[in-house]
Length: 144
Image (cartoon, rainbow, N blue to C red; front, side):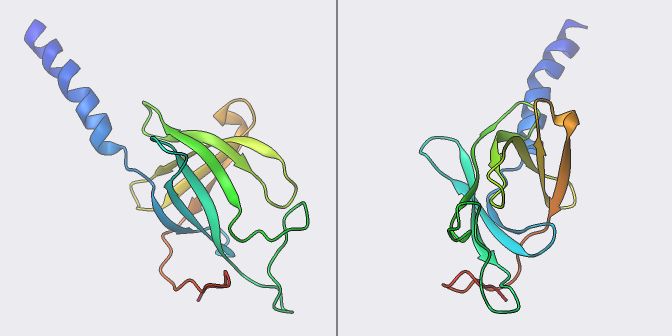
């Protein structure tokens, strides 16, 4: 019985570590109106998400943030740190209104990234599904 307990105690953390996937890469937003690159930032083991592609308006203009500046190359979420639950937890800012939320990101079994923004506890939030980006980024923040 003790051996079984020790075996489970040793294998369980390894299984969690294998199940947790690092969500680095380039992702469409849920609406496919934007593209975000998730990469290491700030030195150490944190991730951030940077807007690298946007859909322009019919007039050809890219969306502006809440300060009137370009959303392109804006940091959307930052200080994402890995937790024991296999998710990365940090902070998210809505570029349209500047509101800040707690957030978590993870790769689901279907290969899509999930982004959950919330206030206080994850139960009080909503989750978006972000598929991998399979297009081409342009230097001017457009994408095809």
